[in-house]
Image 1 (cartoon, rainbow, N blue to C red):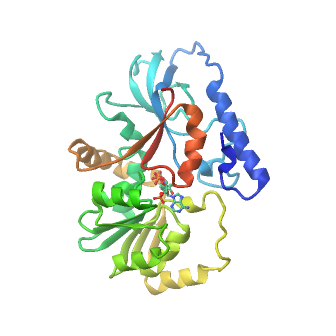
Image 2: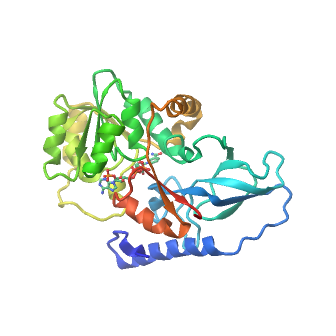
Image 3: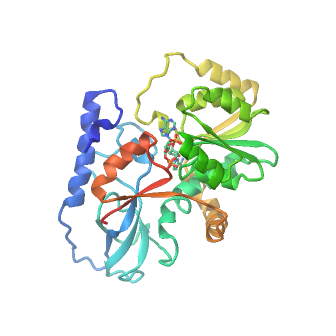
Amino acid sequence: MPLIRIGCPQKAKQAEIKSLLDATHRAVLSAFKVPSNARLIRLSVLSGVVSLDPFMRGRMNDRKSYAKPLQVGDVMVGEAVARVIASHHPDYSEGDIVLAHTGWRTHALSDGAGLRKLDPGGPVTTRLSVFGMPGFTAYSGLRVIGKPQPGKTVVVAAASGRVGSLIGQLAKMAGAIGIAGGPEKCAFVKNELRFDAAIDHRATDFPNQLAGACPDGIDVYFENVGGAIWQAVLPLLNARVPISGLIAQYNGVGHGDGIDRLPATMREILSKSLTLRGFSNYDFAGQHYAEFLREVGAGIADGRIRYREEIVDHLEKAPEAFIGMLDGHNFGKTIVRAAA
Ligand SMILES: NC(=O)c1ccc[n+]([C@@H]2O[C@H](COP(=O)([O-])OP(=O)(O)OC[C@H]3O[C@@H](n4cnc5c(N)ncnc54)[C@H](OP(=O)(O)O)[C@@H]3O)[C@@H](O)[C@H]2O)c1
């Protein structure tokens, strides 16, 4: 498995990442024993799916963040849709389908904390994508920080992904422009997700194409990527930037051209009274999660909200799929079916 394709500059760091992913494998394959604790629930992810998310890359860096880094030997964290295979908990029964923080493994135990029962008749995998944490990131960042207005222009990077794909569909009263990598993703963003336009950031004249598509500038830029895309967006900005993620920078490679752009960036922020605000979706959950479930749930049910999921079979393939996602090889939400 090409584990060290993670584009990390230092050899030592690459070895550390490989070791962390190997440890995840060992945990996956290790024997699973059930203690005789009266309230424990035994979860099976065997017939379920495990989520792959960009934030997991941050857990592999040993630096201060909103969450503690993983140590070598830890299991990779993350959400899964799981089936209860045994329960001594009064609120859960065998066969229940739940959303659970199992991490990357085929089986897990839970005391019920943080579990959410799902309607087994619904499209349960969406609870890991548009109807779950990534969708809520889009919803809350756009509503609380972006505040799109009719007739204004909203731009989002990684527009075919699970966060970005929802932005254009929620911002329909404004003009929505998606940035994506390659013609296939751009066609999906424009034709299937019904954005007003899609621009390929891999095109050599990407900055000119973006400027041409936004003749009055960009009123809301929903930032998922950073790097070269941010450099093309900055001169066009008029107003607000919810900063959701900077995936182009997570591997710590690509030191750019060595030019310090901070003074120019600060000048743009000051001279145009720009508002840039970083956020975690958890910041807004208390106030907005219920309305998100209502609004986006209705949109999924009647087909107004569209999404794309990519299923990878076997948990052993998770590291490879994860590394590919950081290179843009995924198309839509990547979920791993723990066992085919
Ligand atoms: N703040 C929060 O609470 C929160 C929660 C969830 C996610 N996020 C952030 O939201 C962003 C999107 O996450 P997601 O789960 O929806 O992932 P995603 O968009 O489904 O997948 C990642 C996409 O990012 C793009 N990408 C990767 N490397 C790139 C690069 N070097 N330059 C340009 N584009 C690149 C690729 O799309 P293209 O091929 O189209 O370029 C890739 O498909 C991430 O930054 C993530 O950390 C934040």
